[in-house]
Image (cartoon, rainbow, N blue to C red; front, side, top):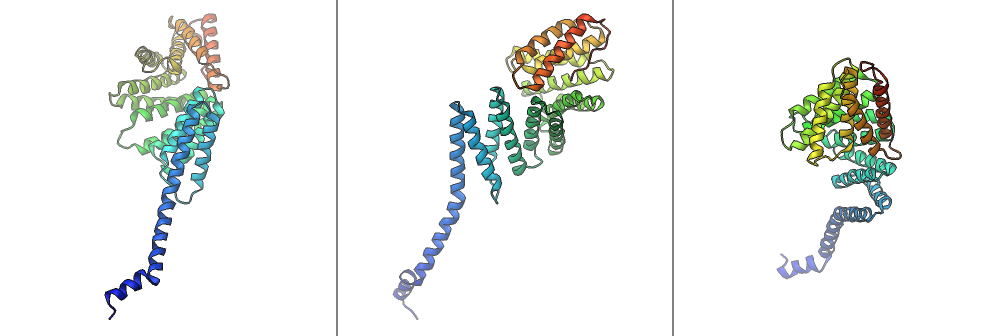
Length: 326
């Protein structure tokens, strides 16, 4: 029977040492393989964010997009939700800066990555909604509507307990407006009614979020009701009141919500013969003029609609049918 000294020599001085060293080497390789890609990803995200914060938006977005491409090619998906969120955030930043192409590239990459990481989730629906709204701004109405309708379907299915009613109301309201622009009025009315029901069922707090959802739902409802031969004035008045309050409290300062609420009030009021339609139409035109930006096809369209509605109100009888908003 070998002694303790013999065993020590066999393990630590002979072939056993080679086996142990090999096992340690393999373990290190496994750890490095898992750890290094994450460190590399974190460094690239931080680097991209610094570039964007310093005004080098294109370079920063390019780095993020290269990182997204690398992640999509990996055999094992990693929980890279932070990258998807960052792409979505900087899509909004690029949109605000008027860089619509960069915004679309980032939003598309974000939606693709979230679809891979969290398919059919509420986050997936949110990314599709953001992408659909951006496509609408670029005048790509059919593609935008497809994404928006998908956001509603996924959002409703992913939230059976009603914990995301505000988000779902916004999805439905945006989809209703897109359907209305496509002259699909019965579907627009159904979707707007769904949006209004979701918004009214949302929890009272945070109040600003609920009121924003109610404002958009009522705008969509007012336009769809008016073109369905119904009275859209109550919904338009509610939307105007909601967005004015948000504007006064600076929770949502101005913006297209208030401009569109003014338009809806003028649109529904003109159809109903309301004398206040002229005042609302003038304010809508002023607000849409302030929102007009180069390359934003949706903003240009709304500005043209507001201008045309004001002409109709000032040149035709109060009970004349105005041309519907597109």
